[in-house]
Length: 104
Image 1 (tube, rainbow, N blue to C red):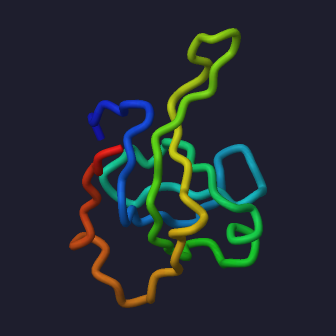
Image 2 (cartoon, rainbow, N blue to C red):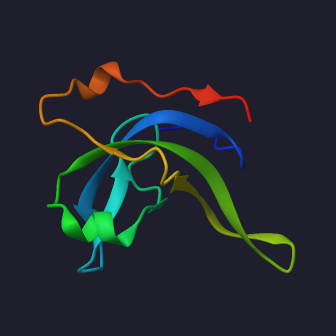
């Protein structure tokens, strides 16, 4: 997707799914829609490891950026709010849940 990420922006009810990460044997999480599927998502290890690949979750996320010596370091990434993570039922209509930015 060609959406510009603004550090600090929050998005509600983003659909995420577990995947096998490129170059890694550990499960990773990616957004299903709205964001580029290659963006990194910070997500609890326990939930990634306890659920099979392809499991989908809904969570609020925030755009974050690491810094080094006060300057941006690496690409922006998403951080899932652990208090909002919910496992999605298998029959959910994912395309009907389009996430939109919320005010900070």
